[in-house]
Image (cartoon, rainbow, N blue to C red; front, side, top):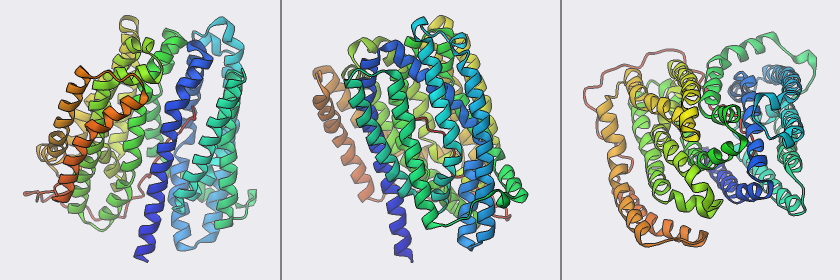
Length: 523
């Protein structure tokens, strides 16, 4: 049984990393291809519309997380009646949300050029693009139940492999049609249709794995109440995610231009790739901390908190060093030298606070796992509001860098002033102990990498992608040697005994922790 469980974990985690790698590789090569074929203004409209519709993720209302929770619960207890009621109630709720989002899309599309500074020649394309993307999202709400069921059944690998297929097919079709002179709307149709096909395929698979009858008679009031109660705090997290990380393009679209959105997006997209890498790894700390909390093992929760954040730091610190030192070369080789003066400052301003956040990625997962994420969710909402206010205040004088600072300042404050202190209150790990145990070794191992990159950047000028990759690999090998030494000597994940911690773990009903909620607009 244990071997079977380990095999399942390896399949899920391995496929997740592979899907992420495919997504990043496709994004790296496809984004500049689309940019150069569509042009700065059209690409900016593309990013703007996906940013607007990204806010439709608010309509999720935490339903996705409740599907994962209750499908898992009822499948484990083999309660077919409640499983049927919950799945049908979720489908009914999502269908209603889809209708509402389609109505909103219709209203927005009629006045999108009045809300944002879109070039006059692109008003019609912008309206049609919003209709296409909005309609696909409206359909994806009820179809998303199938993905949630697969997650609840712990069949992540099915989600990942269907996602990989959709990503590769999307990339191939976009390249094919752009080469033949098609434009923005064709790219949009390809982008939104492929996820719909993959969702339908997931539905076919999940109903073979777990047959559930469908029909209005199975919609249940108690299931709706459980769904609403469970998703409440998750809804705050959805709000905060949209305010924190989906408002920048909207502010620029309203106050500057779609070209400014393009410049900003290039720098921010590179940072986003790093975020996806760390986030996909950090998710494993949710069930680990939830299990430990449920059994009253607070010492293990503390070790997950420290070693989890240390693992995140092992990844994000060298990535941060590479992006800061080689960022200009990365942008030049990726999309062209003319974007460096605008996009590189955005990259630097964004990567520093994101490094602070991602090096503590395990902290939020521990809070979710323990069911003690309410205060943190509220703080992130406040941070998101501050983000918008600061961005609006700074853009008139600093342009796109001001927009980046609007995100960076509140995010840094949350990561430095709030999160470590809040975890101290929740699990009793002193801030100084946490900082020393979690970050001393990753920082020491990263310093030689920084020195090698700095010297290489002074004497070597990478002219194309292969040279850049070789430079990164050579420098990273220094870091890899240090990391291997730390692993072989058991220093990588060793935690010293934390003395003087007597904070007991409250004995209460095991929490119904939120696994993850994230709207992913395919771009």
